[in-house]
Image: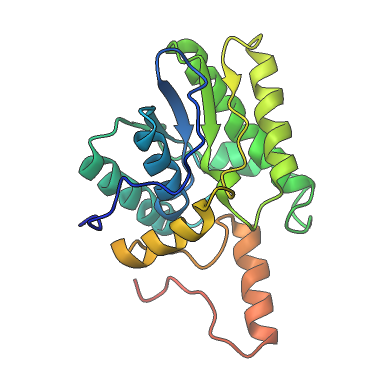
Length: 218
């Protein structure tokens, strides 16, 4: 993996560290979503530790693709990486009853909550005063749901670990994320991640006459 020559010159010029230690725990869903956020943090002297807890990603082949890509990115940057391993049984159990919720519905909020609670607890246990998530960089996600999940998770720690509330789509970061995706050549997933988003994506593709997302030939 090779970074573009201008990597490190973030377009976001107005970012202030939430922590005196200049350190933040960053829950990451994938490499593309993390790229411009990590660059912005490093540009402003904020050291992120990547926290990978995404039991929603299905199937395991897809999970490993996304995890391995963010590991490669972290290694190139020299950024710490925390791997919480794969835990799909917990995710499916927690999502029971939400199987037919639409994108941005109750299932997504519940999924965000599960992941943010895990992140907040790790932050509390390992002396991080603040945590954030790359989910907040996605135009496909409801920023208010993500904010609610992060703040609720923080409150469950007694706000010992606080949620760093940023709209990571602003300040030129969305365009920068798209640019880095192309320049670095990240693996770019074709659906949000869970079994139900895969189901719904393939339903839409079938209706539009497009090829289905398949893992049979891998």
